[in-house]
Length: 227
Image (cartoon, one colour):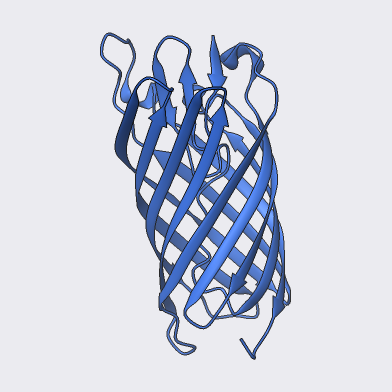
């Protein structure tokens, strides 16, 4: 039987299973090319394969964009498929991000941002800290709609402590998607993947242990030119 043990990880009671994105069940979003001001977003996400536990996620994020930096915080509720998780109930998840606009010139279509996020969970004596570090490249397409496709490879660091033993693991993953702006309203789509090897003694291929997550949502941007 499996249970949720972290904001960005899942584990079996007898053996480890794959880590997911920063906020468990939701892709790692990088707001590359986003203007200054306050942005409020609502998210929906779903796990696409058994390795993701076929989770269903609903959540919200708020971000503040400054001239060079941005900060983002979010909260959500995630529920894995009962057949894959042994009947695990919905869990509340939290996450936060600090990012830096490496390239965001008004007349330059290419946008680049770097960010580090963190997710933390304490469940009984178990503690987990996840830190995804990503660099994103986006391309602002010309036209009446603000369309920006983007991709963000990342290093994903996970530390687990069960009160007796502590372990830190580093993996590689990526997220990518498209942001569409219609005035102050935004639409975002993204897919998230992280690679995990087959555990020793387990059967199946690497894809059986590497989760895929799809996400979508809406946002409201409140620009603040004075920031």
